[in-house]
Length: 430
Image (cartoon, rainbow, N blue to C red; front, side):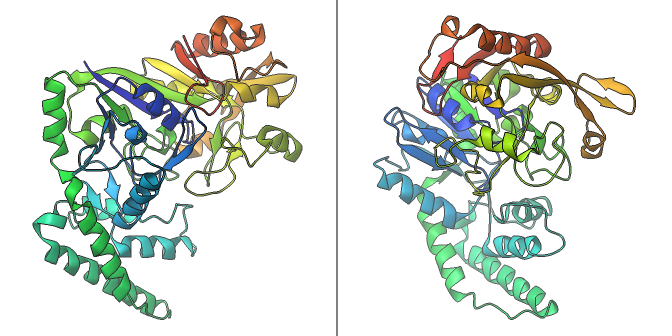
């Protein structure tokens, strides 16, 4: 059972990329299974160099790893080519020997992005990243999309689809009394970049299964997080793909029999970007400023993809328990333990909700129910020591140990890794 799944247990931005990067040491393959360029994973190497990945798997910085972008993803060639070039400019090799892209992954076409931008500028805005993700997945399920296979199999059909989509966008602009766009350059740029990706395109499902049969170790990297799952998240404040462990199976084309570990990543200072309920949100301006601290640091609470300042709150164990229930989490990785002391002399932890005179130990299944819920908190004392250089659990202050043990007690899931800083080596392994 050689597959480890790493996924987010909150609403994203938990720090999954740093654990994928760390855990990839000793793995053969890192495979991204959902989402598109709307995701953002930050990796900080031991020498302090920062990488922000959106489509590339976080294992790309490791020269021993083969990286796979699976069939469950959607790919914008313009953005992926730019990301590859930026990564290569930092001295990281990216070639067909260490990057494979599923021929069945769907393309984000130029009109998908333009329609997304148009929607987000009007009354139907949903707070998306304007990356055309929902539009691409929509065409996928309407069976009218284009897959990566078209780049090599039928480039003429791909060109026709790009032109047709942009023509429809101009029709929509006309109906809205907006001027038409000249899309000639958009077509050429998109097709040129799509052609550059052709060398990476292959049957990754066959590749992964053959490698697994031969004993390869695979780390499946999830994008976004549980609350954003299209089926189980806070609909409609969700993404357009499956962010759960089940999504890893369909998004890579592998069997459940191979999964050995499901590591749910959560952070001690949960964050939220965009709309939707946030039961434990902190709204006091002074408290938020204290939590945010220096906003110029690599671990500042600013969206990797959006650049927006994140809403912050108290740790919500009721929500994490729902995630663990659905994902079958075998262990937790907790990030930003070093930030807990920023809450002040004590920290609140949500251990349940009260909704309509009922007590809930597990978060409800709908956004409107979350809006109707109030948190039930327990308080713990914090600590004054800087723990960022500690690497052994026994060396932590007693208050920090109590904090970890309370989380384990309420969730019933062991915390195997604890982040005490943004770098790869700033982790306590238990």
